[in-house]
Length: 586
Figure 1 (cartoon, rainbow, N blue to C red):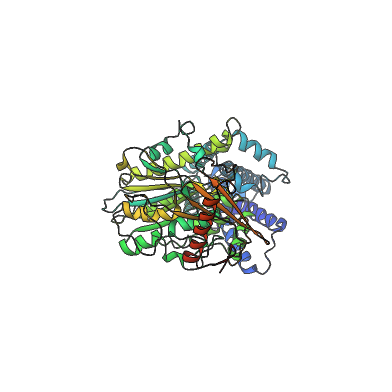
Figure 2: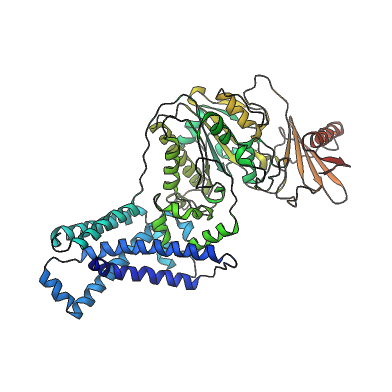
């Protein structure tokens, strides 16, 4: 054991030095959350140490020797010792460089604050690698180094000459393989109930799903070709998280107090997933990354909406200060120790997300109900899609990325023989644009299943509150009274009065009478914009004028007054407001 420690010590000193430097240059102000800060630093130190031990074992294995006399001579010769240590250091540095470079290319958004920071003296080299290489190059380099390592063990070191050293090297092989590759598999099973899978895509617009845009996108085409396309589906708030919560709970975000995306009234017991889990023993999960990681990743059986508190944010920011940590956490076996990684904007470990999805749906004897959120990554698409932007438009790169994600989900469902029996709900998530514009609230909505045979377009107005009743209708499950809305598959058309709420332009105080709202009935939309001295009403025909360029309040007075009356009655009857001179009070 002593020999193993001596061999890996140079590598450990390297990672410990890097850890200390990163700790010293960090400008993170942890304030009163020192316990969370230092406990996470300890976890990161342990992760660095494990990584250093693995790399040190590989590096030492490359320069190991067999002859006992030479070993004795080496240990008593200072020059030979120095040369051996320097070789070990050189191989360790090369290994660290290759491992980190591979992750920089894989997750460039994660490294924006460290290795790709303009102030970092080495950033130009990493930017060159990001723009000109792929992770495959470095995986090949790692494989070559492993080959050298195994060759030296086989040819130069026998078990008799150093059993502890030999065991240490073998463990290093396993550890580095875990870092290089991720594992995931699924077992097919039979079941009776239909599964349901919600796939939410932030910032996806109806205009992006034209026939021209989808020409070469097989994932989108496979879902859309066997779907009901509800082209006039509205989110009820322009807050992304509130829109998702509303969709899953069938509750209006303003009416139930989560207009800002926080659900304080026990939403975990009021969603379609919790309903299916409790009443039909569904295996449920909420799978997300980035900003939509408001679920408790430690309780994957339940849907628990969770907005990160200050302590969790501190933990996430601490992770972001350490440039070598992604090498270890980009693996489903290790990332569980750093769940706060999901709170970091810009970082996504697709392999882990996909494996988690597989683990949730493969359970035998149980149907599954899952929500799978795909974030838009802003301008930080993962490898290799961000490279497409150099030669293609960002939108094409973005749609290609999304399509590959959809194809991967479909392939997982097919490999587990669950595709034909799964209802897929593909929906867009609004992007918090300011104002009450019609197109800021209208989102794509496709409900797909191979039984539907071909695409059917539904032109009636619906809201995200109608999706849960529709899914229960398709699943032949009785609707619970806790879910509002109407099924999209009702045989008769029902005129809906849809109230939208502008989260961005409100003061985020639900008791304020100055919250901007809109009412949609049929083809007409009424914008209500309370000012301190008066109410500003705007009337539009959103069928003929979807961009709301022609205001009709003066030319269609009768319709305007009728819409105002409908709006005030709805606020009083359904939202519990008292309307006085157009102002709504709670």
